[in-house]
View 1 (tube, rainbow, N blue to C red):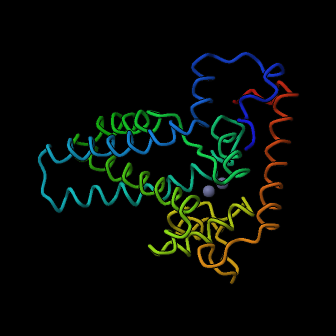
View 2 (cartoon, rainbow, N blue to C red):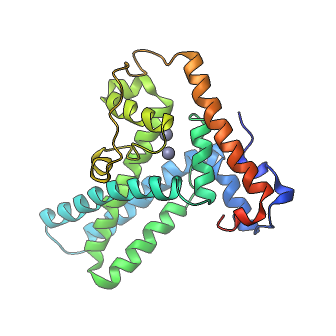
Length: 245
Ligand SMILES: [Zn+2]
Ligand SMILES: [Zn+2]
């Protein structure tokens, strides 16, 4: 297991707030990883309850939630491409760590997604009825939970992924891990096709039926370990490079 990036080159990095350091530690904490799955499921349910409590027909409610769920697909693509693989930040470091060790339990700090969802809900509620905003955010949050579960299953339960029909998404996501400039969508290929970043997986069998050869897996991991290490080293030895972290 590679050391958490936050532990590297601390002496060369400018001082950070206690909140920032706690947040960064949580990103690599296995308990945080499991806790966010529960907190975000409860969070999505809260928006559903508010939406159902507000007046509206069941067809309208379903449509509002469906629009939110579909909108998540674009957000998933955008966050992964332009934040996970974007400018230097705590999110990019966490994502680079996931690429270097695809079984590491890396997740956003607990409550971050919930707070973000409440932020979106609050802004939307200024312009549209609270019930509509709640169901839209519920759909969005449901999409996020769907993404988190699918991504977890792809990396931690490959055999199960094959059993529930995720083998194609598994192969597509494996292409992204080998070539991080393509296939940013995890639950769908729609936005990769729209933005021209979709790459069809090769005809190699899915992981659940043919385990990845050990040497290939080693090479894959060592390549990304080197990438992460060089990125972290450049951050820690060049204080100006940490300005956006
Ligand atoms: Zn992944
Ligand atoms: Zn990625």
